Length: 281
Image (cartoon, rainbow, N blue to C red; front, side, top):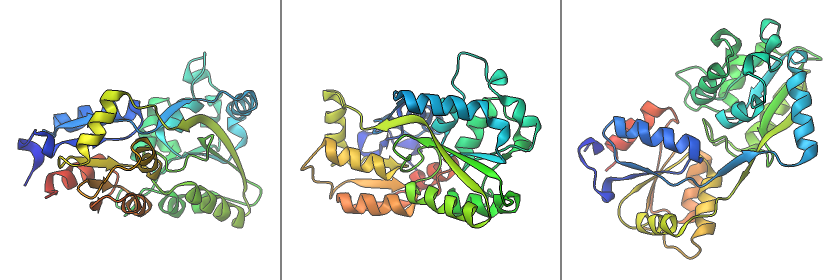
């Protein structure tokens, strides 16, 4: 039965993405007739370490020295291009050269376009890909890499374990991609554009989470890190009556390990998530 006509807490979707992304998803879900509430389980902030800030500045200025710059998530895009100068002046002269922008999925690609990169300079997995992750991206970009090419991977300071915008492949996926690039003769560099950490839940958010563990709400997870933060925030909570909709097999494993009684998986594209919510028993 579709959730479109049910707005009781028992049919509610809990959006656990970082605050900015969660707010957009809640608006989008409401527009589709689905009751949703944001409960961000990953906090995002700009890098505070001076060395990380300096490295990020150097990477921005060296944009056109790379064959490609891979962004692990929409947040990686936003914080990479964050500056006192307009994006068009932020070393983006490189968009007219060989430098391409690699995205693991549609959310990151949209963020790149919003920052001023032309769509024809952005590479991402095929729309029909079973998953939006590093493996699917590599299928598209492998022919670009030549021996000696420099490839920059922009991620979070903790390795961005599960990009919040598109994929939950985790740090192992980034390392796998780096291995493929190296095998093709490329030189991989990493830079941190932001920091990820566990949020401090307010009493109201804790009450929301506790209630959603048993009232039939559907938890939407796009990151196994979010699952871990939830478990840490509510130690001892019984999740056997809780339901989760996840966007990658590794998140499914995390939700199972946390004790969620029902775990279902779908592609991370918004329309696929909506379809899965509407068909959820």
